[in-house]
Image 1 (tube, helix red, strand yellow):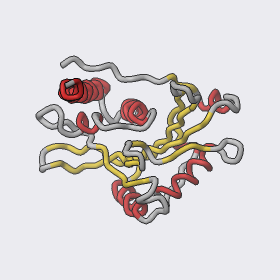
Image 2 (tube, rainbow, N blue to C red):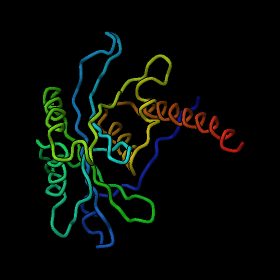
Image 3 (cartoon, one colour):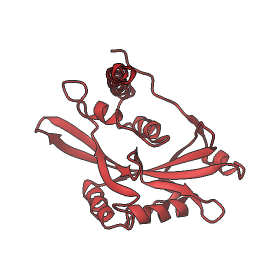
Image 4 (cartoon, rainbow, N blue to C red):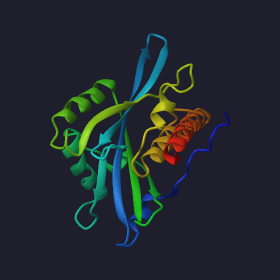
Length: 212
């Protein structure tokens, strides 16, 4: 199986993003992660724990949402949304990671923030999220991204990537894992290729049934 190229969005600087006109919407999301020394089944290194969430629409994404720049700075708007879905965390400009322009009918610039926590702090966020206002409504629960691949070359990260993600979330995840040196680019590409192949085979199985 040949490795797939990592998807790329058009990246711009924070300064360039702030200069965009009123026709652009701004979304701000946070990737919270922690080094994890644990081993799955006593032999598969966990390496890192990264939090994403299951949304009300059945799609995976990072905690966060749209920020109305008429009333909020990026960080104040992000923290307002995080307070509704996580309940216990505030990010700052120092946590800013990237801005990307999205393709489609809506003009959106997607800002990603990233903060490394201790594993204990990450667990505290998970506990707090269960008691947040949006839990069970707009947010159906936090999940940890499995950053490993099992011997069958599908279990773990490849299977996770075969799920459905909201908008730029999958691209942002791959980008962050690469630039934060959490996973080598070749391993990211291999996992993405395996996930893509799985989705292709699943579609091929469905097509004969749908055409009969």
